[in-house]
Length: 90
Image (cartoon, rainbow, N blue to C red):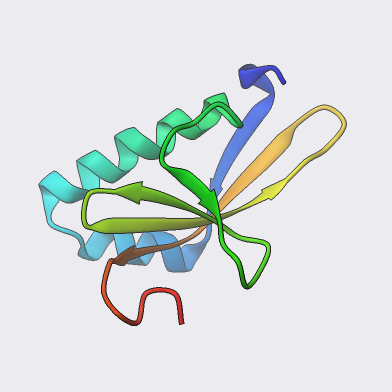
């Protein structure tokens, strides 16, 4: 799959969650999300068991996203950015 044909989109919810992160953490999350343009050759990603979403691990934070493959462009939609705790995946 051609990395140039991958598009990353953010939901409003995920953008609001990013604004609440400390500056160093938000920079780290943004840098790691940019690596998703090389989908599916990205390290630190697993498919979640109870749904269609994937999880990208970024230190203490988790980026939850969906993949929508298309003929010409694969869209990776960032759904949530959460601090890892016991309620992250519930």
